[in-house]
Image (cartoon, rainbow, N blue to C red):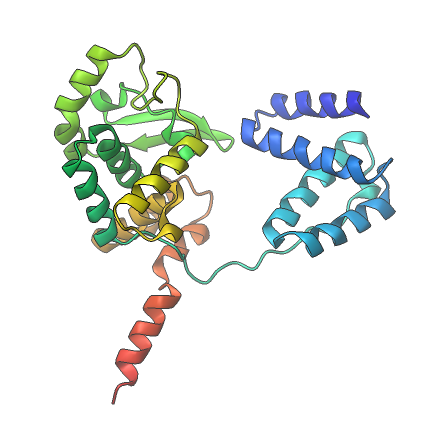
Length: 271
């Protein structure tokens, strides 16, 4: 089956799936064949059941999707099983607050960590996914945006002019001292990884007293959306800026978090 798996990998590459998606699909297929000698309808049903018993619904869902795609690739659509429905949250949770964001920036600035300061600032003010953020280039500081292929389409990620002006001196020194066109690199001068950014944010959050549940890269993407809607209620524009294929995906930012729902409920019920 190794030849079929490698052929499937090349097939996904031809479809221009992201590296992360391809890796996740191949990993799921290898997990399946550690448990079963052949792929058929019976084994697929049992695999789905086991995944739901042992893992969170989202993980189980992703693995089932990968195996269904593999079955289709092999020409055995009859082996496919029904997908796993994931309950969509009524609101976005675990988002860093604007106060925590400012607290984090203040700590980084106080300690002279310019790189960290601007990394967090750009994460929060561009709304980029971390996989997109690591590909931001210096050209964006000139034209005000970076364009890249992401999630099967061209994405234009805007950089606020105010942020460009405030960071100009830092990046003038940065590009004089480094041999790269990327806005942010690791200590070896290579492209940052999602895992590397996540580790840095967790380390800084612990140092500056930020809740660990909001200490992740995607938290700043959520913050961007929430703060944007406070000043501009154009949900269609925000959907475009976030790279969402549907406005319904973006509408989650119009809903209150559980904590805010409870706070407003208690305030309104105090009579």
